Image (cartoon, rainbow, N blue to C red):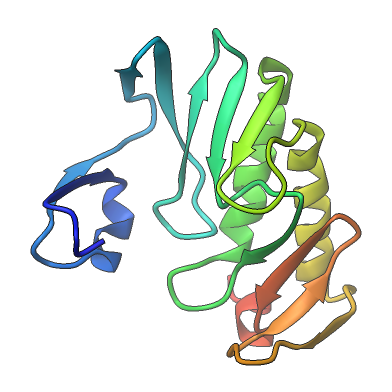
Length: 162
C-alpha cells in the first residue's frame, strides 16, 4: 500500500501499511456512499485483526474482503491473523446472512451465496479441531488444510493459538 497517499482501514491493520501513507480509521457502523451504494462497515477480525466487510443492506450485498470465500485458500497464518477471531466473525456474519443475497469476495469464485459464510465457519471449526487433512504448501511457510468447502493456509502454531 506504499503507492497510496492515503487509505481508509481499520486501525488494527495500520501496522501493515507503509509509514508514509496517511491513514483514516474505519470502524463498526461507519457508513459511506459510493455512487448509489450505501456501504456500512462490519468489523470481522481474524483474517487480519483489522478485517472489515462492507454491507449494502438495501441492495442485499456484502463485500467480504478475504474473509468469505468459496474454495479458498484463506490465509490464516502469521502473527497478524487469528483463527479464533475468524470463527467468531463468521458467526457474526452468519447471524446476518439472511440480509444478503450476494457476497463479493476479493478472490477466487465470485460472487458467492450467503451459505458460504456457514460453510467457511464449519471448515474453520474443523481446522481448529485438528481434523482437516493437510499437506505442506510448496513455497509457503505453512500447510494447506483442506476443508469440505474451503482450504486454509495455516501453521500448527496458528491453528492452536488463542
